[in-house]
Image 1 (tube, rainbow, N blue to C red):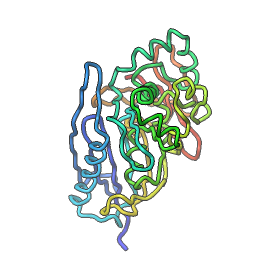
Image 2: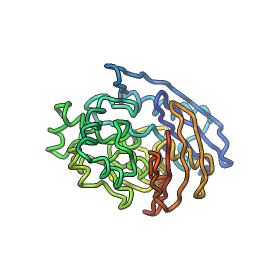
Image 3: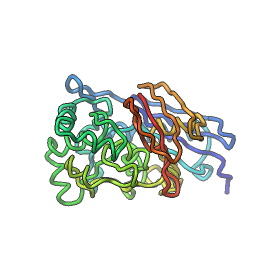
Image 4: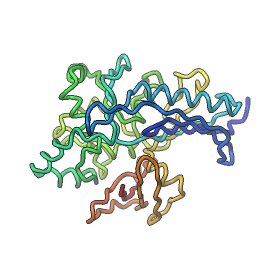
Length: 305
């Protein structure tokens, strides 16, 4: 049996999907990348086809391992990092998306946020989630789907509705629908997750009209969680890590101790500071967010974008 000397990283971004094979010395030996369509139905609206996200990520994964000349038996695990806050809804039974993904940049729910602020709900949201209420986050996107996509309430009533961010969508597809999970770093970007207790918050779920059973199980950022079954070339490879792109970049830049800061540049520009075990509240509209979770213990960061 060959040594498991390689790691496959899946980087699902806002404008493209990328896969990178790393060797035992953490050196990249193969890379594949594929752009996909940006959909702008109206001014301020930004969408992706969830099927294009999956197919582009699947295709780059296969091309990268072929380029590297390795097999599934040589891969120790897969790590997933993803564009955050983008909201996807699908049918639990069929895996079919109900509509296009609503991208983090989308502003269609700005009026919903304004109403929440007018109703004095911003303090509650900030206290529980560490986030400044904004259409950027997933909660109002999920609420919009519930209100505007006919299939969503019907599937919710039969416990067959799945709401997830991109990581949950990828894991579900990689496992042929067997796993419906998200890690704590991605959950903390939804505006539905209590970063103090480490769980979906029933008060916030009620506020946004989101059924708890439609949301994924929140797990650690470190696995393994499951094995790939949907891609023949990767069958049996463990899914060993999940993190939102900016949290992954925090540790990719080796900001592993409290007080260390990174700034990275992609579709946006994001600063994150590791705050360790402490949730640090900002007086200047920085966000408090989960950096990672391991063994059920959460570590935190402050973020500005």
